[in-house]
Length: 253
Ligand code: PEP
Image (cartoon, rainbow, N blue to C red):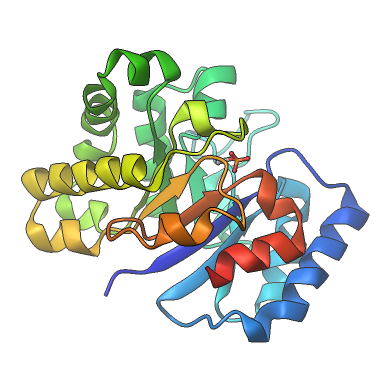
């Protein structure tokens, strides 16, 4: 059975007090969330709160801390960067790699992202690799080619064993932070396509075991119909992860 995961990506939001009350709000609801080994939650806060969160989560076995990024370098004179090794030493288990905002604003290419994945895996972090088409690509009807290229140029360089330790997040760029969600049918079509590509590249069993998340304006209102689709194994949630009640409702969905 593949893992179901809801990941909250706080991006560059929440001051310290807001971070603490958001975490407390989620912890209060922990017992209602029906989590298990195969149904988990990852919270990816800004770096300064990551150790606080990972240490609070130690008593909550199905809540995990995640990083929003890691450096492609191992260590040394890279002012402002945070290495995979530092992140892993803080009891963090997941790292988001290749979010479209990193690709767009920080010019991260698939080549750089692959280096980040190697660094993360060396430290036993699980990368959540984001892919997804632009609005132009969707309107031109070439979104499958767009996504296939992102996979070919990055994660499909991994061996089957390495690929077995990543999570994929399909995030159409036109749906991120815009309030425009992909319809369940649109999202399912792409998730099925990604799973088929994994099958062709590696094997049916790897394809069946890979967790593929949907991200792009997920809310408490649209979560259950998205998550009811057979190839959607959870969500990567931005804006709605900043409200404890709404995020808890998404987890329940
Ligand atoms: C995201 O940050 O990955 C995201 C999907 O954001 P939002 O849910 O706000 O669209």
